[in-house]
Image 1: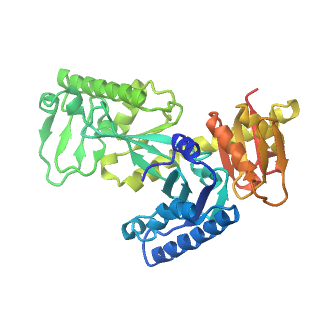
Image 2: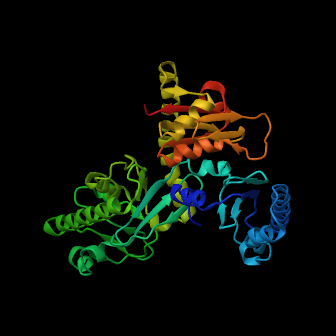
Length: 400
């Protein structure tokens, strides 16, 4: 399951020609409840059809637009591979669906563009981070957020120490001692315990053996290997500001932090042999380190709002915030994920019109503000109402 990215969101918004249908529903990963999920989608499609008829869409055009999502109702395999929520988007020229680890309230909405506010927790405060899982025999790189994790293609990054330095490395640098049922161990000169801590899962006991040139050469080989990996990681990652969590045995972790030039590698890594963990275990361990980093960022942003509200560098008035977001002036935005503010935004006249109830042609202006902020490279924290500074449904810190 691919993580939802800003690029995918931009692509989705660019594709949709009005009228645009947005459908959200909670789903179940397994069990008889998956049949109820089909019924939910069927009912939501019926609601969308009614809204399209009210807008004057003809039956032929309507049937063509809703044909792709209706085909999902008959796809048994599709319903066997669900997550916690399903988002479906349909327009005359576009059809997309996302299975995401986030449960939604049921919603069917037809508007001038796709409604993406329920997806913001996957794109905003729960920002992406990366996980580098390192062992001498295996290198893996992941993109993750609070909810999910996926492995990335390494491209030209070596997948093992042997690949990076040649297949004779082990023969040149290691002396093996057979141990029956013992965990694999790797020892480095001068660090008997730290370097020789068990790496569970191996059946032979391997170590950097003894003293002298052989051991020092082996350490130098690992040092060189980690430099090669770090260079490849920095070239590959599109967002160098996203935190990088390193998962490796303690001495490899320490050595990688010594050699790494990655600007956002977190000072503490996950210690242990990542080859012994499931993907879910690796994700949970990495998130324990990434979460405090993100929580600190949110707290600092809230404090920045308090500090700047008095001098015009921050605001909680939707009309001002939306215009500033459209201009690309919003650095950080807090938005209440459970609130809606219906109305219209005239970009030519730079006027915001708010309505107490939704009217034909309206859009959710909180959603629009968040989208404009994301598109212009800002940070969005989609949070509960109690976490929005200023007491309203939206708050922004401006770049200038």
